[in-house]
Length: 258
Ligand code: G3P
Ligand code: MG
Image 1: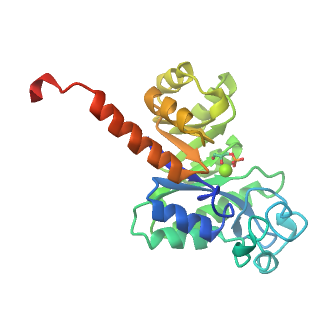
Image 2: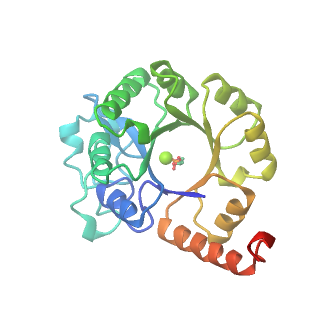
Image 3: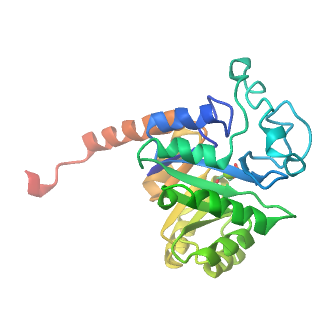
């Protein structure tokens, strides 16, 4: 089962910062997940909320600030004073960091729904991703199927995941319309019937967010879920290794190897 670091290693570092992504990359996760919004001057920046106050020392809406203003905000002190040097990264900066890893880690770029400038966001994200040589490592996701639809118009081959709190007829219809390869589901709504239905609908992967409890991770692994998003990638990696070793020791040898 793939381990994806949700907003980077966000239990230990301020979410969606270079420190958080760097630390997650060093752990050897399958991928990092990040959230993208557009600045006033059209730069894709990595921030979860559409306002800056929860995770920086600023106030106001992301889309009302230029990148030169946003980059001056402190995006680390709210988490702990020792991260006071952290700033809001651009999408391009995070992709450049991943690129230095030599094609080992995937990136889930989550496009945040926006009431204005949706096409501008899609265009800017697309241009930024394709200015790198790691476009094939990028998985795009969104709760807003319209954003994914706009991305799909760019290419039939890019990998899209529909984010959905629950799996129902509307989600299944939207995922089909945009030819989403994958589904990203809220852990609260996971059950094996959902996994069966996602497979019946020919989707390739079901990943679940946000999983921070070892027992839940083991359950999802045993159920056959493709991946989880977690704030605690260290704990989840340890859990899977420990569980794998335990199962190895309790599984009787295959007759062919006796
Ligand atoms: O992509 C999984 C997860 O990030 C979706 O929810 O609100 O944390 O962006 P959120
Ligand atoms: Mg997200």
